[in-house]
Image (cartoon, rainbow, N blue to C red):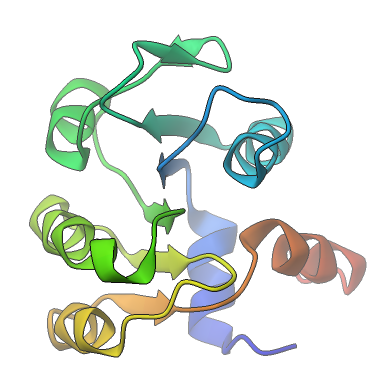
Length: 141
């Protein structure tokens, strides 16, 4: 397990997870991870400016719009290319997210440093679904 106890507590206590780059296509990882998180009881907020609805829930163009309409967002799960991460991190800081999760292959050290400097926990290059399943298997959730 690669997660520290503080990160596990954030995941355990989280109620709302924004999935940045969520796709309406069921074969895309962003869609299947969002669906899994919904099945686990999280309120999932898809972020994709090209769509109005994904997985039967309202989709937002950005994190600021999502927070304004949906309320607090605890975790921001990012499915974007590494070089496109910084604006989402800035918004995550602005909305007061507790955890920024960059999915497999998504690494941006500069953005991570900015988030950590603002007091936000950051995980990079990991799949939230995979780690969530592992935490459940180990009875940590």
